[in-house]
Image (tube, rainbow, N blue to C red; front, side, top):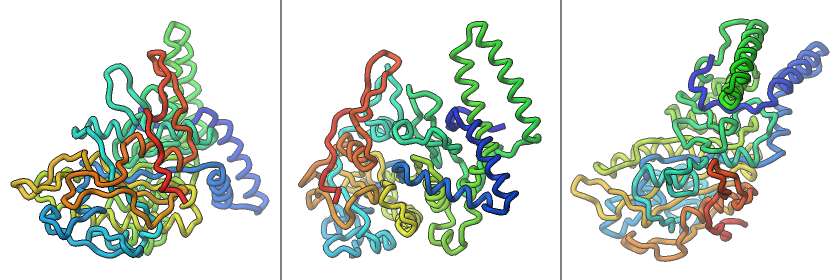
Length: 425
């Protein structure tokens, strides 16, 4: 069966719904009316009409703003990075982002992000949860909050998927834990049942009996969590929608545009999952902690991320999905404008940048600016709570919605902040 049970997220009502879909599919096939793919396509279209989704392109390690979307080619702090023109007159970005430059009409840049957290773990936690880490509460990741607010309770796929590790569901519990994909592009490991479905159902029945006996003896809470995890695992194994994880059926030309690296495959997977009804997908790109050899490392990373991100946004737009799918490119903070003695840039939360597209965001604009030397915010500072509140506005979620923590304290989705209204049309 599936490993990493702590990351499986299939909702509780999947068994009855699965049986219904199987009967409908068998009947339709028997009559020659609809194929299984027809049914899944109709279901996916229905799900996409029901709500919004978000794809987070997470640049782990904190990308340099000067080598991405806020270059300073005319200043010594620019580090030799050249800028290129984009499809929007007056907006220039770093030269390694050629494909992104072509679709700047669909992208909004925030060049005035600012924060105080310069530690990777603390800043990553804050950017994912909206809260500074505290010993008493394990806050849910933003994706888990999105799933709670927008997720379809009948969806047979996980509501939250992450290509690589991410923040968990915290006190929201196992129903909203992310499903972690280690190798994008193919079916998750261990989703093939080693026995027939009939035999698997008998085994699950026996498992439930054993859990019921354990619950009677005082283990009700632990038993409930364990049964939900196994229900989710069985849901992934039994559902025909699990094929959404396999990108092999996509056209070769499209796969080439995304890129053959893991990040490119992850972005294509993200589009497939959102198209199938998944509410939140994170795709992680490691390696941005460029304390040494910053220029060449940023160029190498950008060459992988640039075509994948540009193709993802274009693909979503071509399929009529971009208006309801918020795409965000960001990391946990920025890098120092002054280059250190190892030709690198160090941690710098005071100034960094974010790129956004879709979800009602008006592309072709820049919010805020940094000073000519990149050391300060020159105009329109945007905090992390402001940014997460903006995500909520894009997704039509109330950032003030409260969940009760295990300590009995109501906790909002975002701790303060004001949406950046200028981002929206």
